[in-house]
Length: 251
Image (cartoon, rainbow, N blue to C red):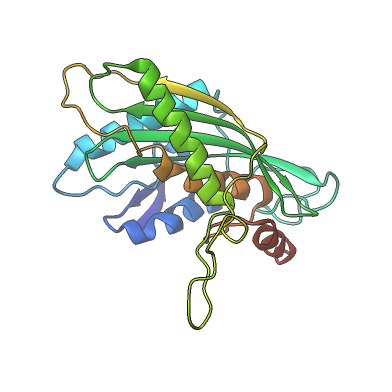
């Protein structure tokens, strides 16, 4: 991976998906907004070339427009900062942030981007997802309502995975064997507002819409947590204990 500031903007190049997290961190260090920079941490495989990048960027821009994305560096700057890249830890117990993620599902089997807005309780580590905006392209759309249902269901399933679901085990066996030990979203949980942007491509080949939205939820929420707190958590699920420990280690 190479990076260099040129004429006030950051140029990043990589063909290694393992470097994507580092790329986002570089955007934060240089104070570059992801959408404005046109750089969302996307690899550029040789077999798909510019089409891969263009498709993903179109979906990211569509989601950002629907979410009324305001260009600014991430994490958000607040009064009373301890440092340039560290949100204030005092004041309100709850911090709000936004994050974006996008994916070319299985390479070329659907394209989706999501903006997540979250509230982070610094005292408890609890994450409250308040809004998800999802833009998806699966080629020609024959059933818009069905596609919206798939997107909304995928967003909620991905949210459950991002915030609670994890297989656990001891020295001998799997221990997450029922709904008490495997922590999916409970009945009655606070559902975020979900907004969908359907991108119809009648001249393109049909591709996947069934599970596409699931794949970006954790990344979007993780980026929103970083935007709110300045803490980058690289392991799911984002449980209150894990989030609170990360926030406490910030200082």
